[in-house]
Image 1: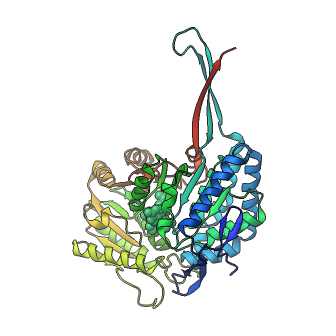
Image 2 (image 1 turned 90 degrees about the horizontal axis):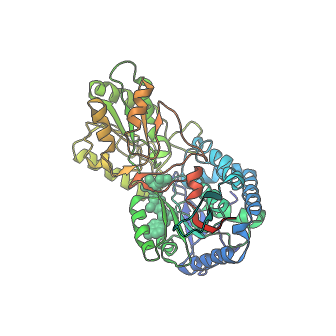
Length: 489
Ligand code: NAD
């Protein structure tokens, strides 16, 4: 595998100032794949200075044609390496190769850069307001609202869908005329460092516009929150880290765009008729070992159909194939690290201790002697107040919760600090839509419909985040607003 171990700072591919490196581990085999430059605070500060310089002293922020060309060159060069990226993602993330044909690689590669590039020409950069004599002094003014880039954006990303998340940051941030410094998750650095190499060698994106600093030290990312040279932080990761970033950014009053955790519901409303297909689909949460922020990990079913629903989902879950993520028939690979595996097992132990009934799974699979695997797991008799129903597990663990009537279902769905996503099923579409409108989350799939796309805003209510990624909202978030007036002619 032709991986890139160096960082990108000011247009150059560089090692860490100390020369230190950290290991990249394959979570399915526990083998060391290779190493990556281990960036320090000093490296981060150099990267920030380069991004600041590129924003303040080049025409990047005003040259839309250069930005569109740069994004399209990047996309074409990534497409030329698509199969290498696929193998690399499966190796470092442990994601099933199946997922790379969809959200992990092919889908974002198709649109995450090209849609924002296309929007550079269509975005409402200026909006006219009606002429007005604002203070009633007989001076009529023409007025406009201008949208301008924010400046230098610090970007911190997680390991679960790393390429998808990074591309969906680069596209809108650069399209809107900003410069950026990216700090990828230490578990999965190579997809990011590869993007750095491609930018340096195969695009006209000027030096300093995008800088990529990998580090084994999470706190190197914190410099992005505290530095007065950074104008905004865009973060995807856990709610705990999001809180910390927000606090660190407060001293410089930096806007923070946060895409955080979730505890979404999979709600089947029907008391009558066939529920096999709708309930069965909830077993899909073991895809990528449950490591998706939008995974609906609380299955809500009417109490009148509870036992039947548990049986349906048990059969479906036990059919899901797990194991070697390079096998195209596998749905579930390993957790990303030993730490995550232990964390998930800890939640399973807590579920049992708090009185939930283990229906299937619950341990490390005996047939996987290597790798950080956890069996696809279902808990029944779950009360929504239990820890496994309240906290994000980030593993292949589904909790089945009963309800009585639509109001009760909505109450349970909203009884969460999170509000990221969810799924609603009902034979009657209008009933499903009505319930969907009462659930406080940023996205919802109704009767199997998928909402995802570069043009579709994605983000959270409540402690699932602030702001939206993708769509017009996801462009606007990387802009500042300037209102101007001049004497009307
Ligand atoms: P994490 O919060 O542990 O780490 C995310 C990133 O933050 C990593 O790059 C890490 O190095 C960095 N980091 C850690 N501490 C930091 C600090 N103090 N300052 C700056 N950076 C710091 O999350 P994770 O375990 O990598 O990812 C899983 C989490 O991400 C889950 O909670 C999941 O729900 C969430 N997530 C959310 C979305 C979304 O769009 N809402 C998408 C994917 C993942």
